[in-house]
Amino acid sequence: MREAIGFCKQELEINAMIDLDLKYEERVNFEKCLTENYLMKHGMDYFGKRDLIYIDLYGKNDVRRLTTTSIDAE
Image 1 (tube, helix red, strand yellow):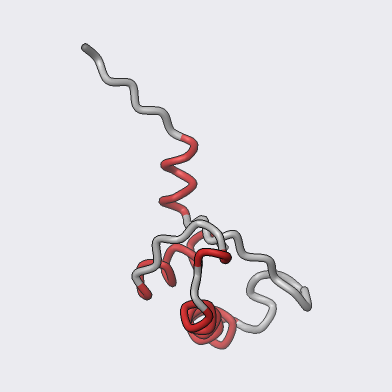
Image 2 (image 1 turned 180 degrees about the horizontal axis):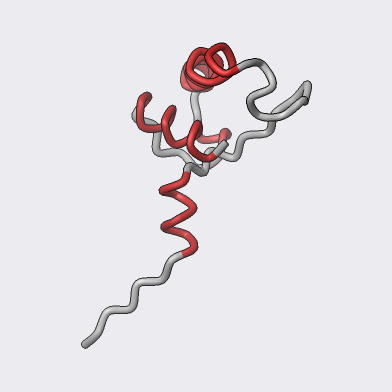
C-alpha cells in the first residue's frame, strides 16, 4: 500500500499527508492513479478483500522520514 501511495503522490506531484489537504480534483486523480496502476493491473483485491480502503497518504519515503532520526554531530 505504501509503495502505491508513494508512486501516485510522486506521479501527481502531491505533497499532502492527509486527504483533507487535497482538492476534489486531486482526490479524483489520486483514486484514478491507484485504480489504473494497481487495482486494474494487479487485480481488484490488490489491497486485500475490502469494500472500502482508507488511505492516509503516507508513502514509503514519508514513513521513512518519520521513523528515522538524524543526529548531527557538532
